[in-house]
Image (tube, rainbow, N blue to C red):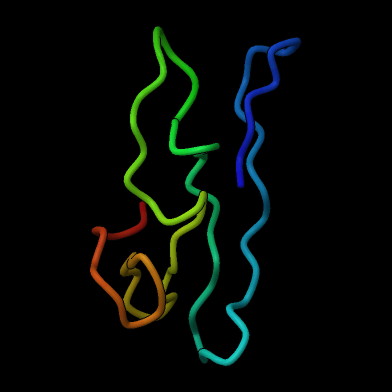
Amino acid sequence: MGYWNAKEKTTIFFEDEPWEGYKDWYRVDCGCCMGTRWGGEYPEECTCNMGFLAWHKPSNVLALYPGGPLRGHRY
């Protein structure tokens, strides 16, 4: 979902949005584009799902999709 703005030399992120059909789950931008996380000295391989992760707000947990494999926690 995120993308690299070469002119400003920064990554542009998208706002969190509710994940339809899943209470308390949100789609959050992980900053990846086409499997690569940009910024810093060089690009890094991204392990999220299509540029976004699922965030369960009450527990602060991140997953690939609601109820799916865990990816850590937010913040």
